[in-house]
Length: 210
Image 1: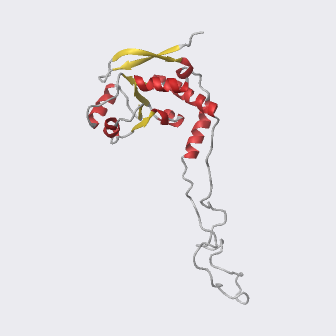
Image 2: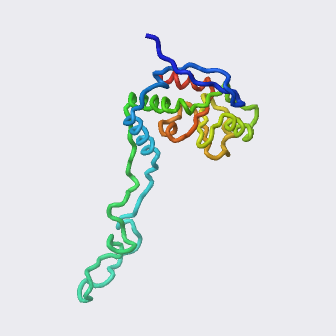
Image 3: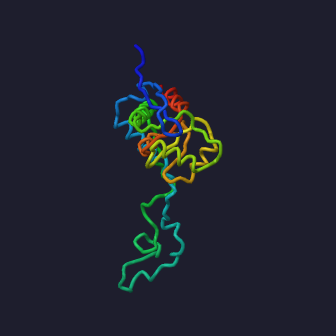
């Protein structure tokens, strides 16, 4: 049985439709699976945490070596150190230690399915151009391209190869991020309103997930 295909429009740098390209429905026409997509986003966000939070325990807080007052005869409760957790400025009992680890992982097949679902949900938001290259580093060139493609809002530009001109031209544009095709996550696809790429990059996505 032949693989089903989906047609994706291809635009020129002026925003005019010039052709269509067929991509596999097994990658760009997958029925949404909310659970695996949710799991992928949770893993991504958990793995982005730096886990550097730390509080000091009573033995790490400076001071408090001297007994605040004598044991008996003052009418006050017994106190051995001003660094006790019940004192202001004292140590923290159950705070983060700096050794916590929130890393999560997802089954490889599930993650691949999540990516397929995410790409499938973004087919209507794809802005595929013939070629994504600029002769020089010009922010105006990227702004003009996005305007021609009607890519408004948060936009992700995906590259199959490192291109310094594209990266530097887009780095100062608000809500526009440039990334490599092998670094696109389910979170990225859900977060950005538009995905801009060229035909070569689209084929890389298809071949990687097929």
